[in-house]
Image 1: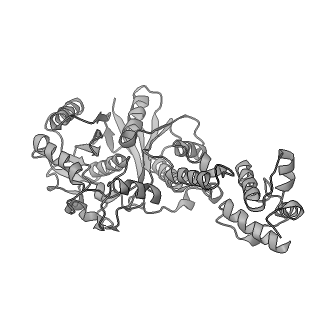
Image 2: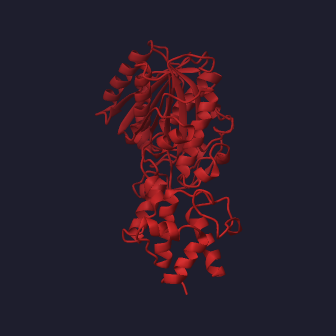
Image 3: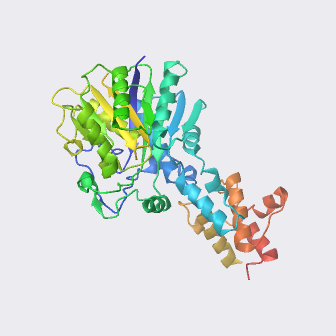
Length: 354
Length: 87
């Protein structure tokens, strides 16, 4: 059974939400280790009395989800599923800070209520009035892929005809400071679009709220097809990764039919070395592109990659700023997305035209 | 009293993140819940925390809460009658 993408929406550090879905002229940030999302006009999506209690990730997530449904021209979905690596961080931090400062007394209820990881899925359901299946997956760098897997299973079982699935993560000052101490991010200021030119340790922190309306029925809005994603953990060496990737490709498409590989290169030399090693072994002669200089590194950045891959298939073009070694010469039918975070969780997704 | 009412209005706007409002929008005699400002049970908890944290007023029962949190004026009356943090 084919699973179609009938609509999508992304709030990101690029103007992906305001109509420029495939950034031809992307925003180039002078970044001190992080880039943040461009704010949507929340008022157009959520009543101010409802929005006042929502933190940034919830407000932006709800906006992205509603816009996705509008883009798909769909009614209420048969399921709402989100993936998030760290959930509603800002509210969690507020709650913990108050608990510490007030010696565990007089805690404000709002940040506590909104700090759970499944707040966003629930908020979307309440706002659009959807009483169907509602779930949230929290598995660090594989959170979105797990949400996507659940969505595809539901559609294949015919438990739903349309599923709203998304990947969301927010960046806060506290989380940035903590992860900076762990050496995750570049210490020197960088130009985001030149991320790969800064050879050294650390990447660029980012965030994003991306949603898709998937369906088991093709309609006039369908523009891409997604396969079941695959995750593998801490491969022993490059040969183990190679075997997994070969196996995924042989399961999802014909040999030699991949037109583009979209990779999670993030500017950290130890991270990127893995992609470069595998490129020689597996992707010789296949055009490659990358995306994390546009959105930054975060647990569910693969959702942004899927958004970009689907737009590439829809528009049949790879923006120059994303190309690693030139774009595909012919028609772009199959795009392989390969991402990993610090060599822990590796993920593979395949998108095709429909 | 007038100063306290004004302060309370500002604190309510901040605590409940009523971004669209200014103190003049709140009628101190009007009910805070349902008909007036349209606040709900979570807001009631926020106001309970606000009263205890800023003015040392502890609301012990739901009935007491209904009376004290009825309006800005009833909150101010309660503070004047028994508040520790207000002179």
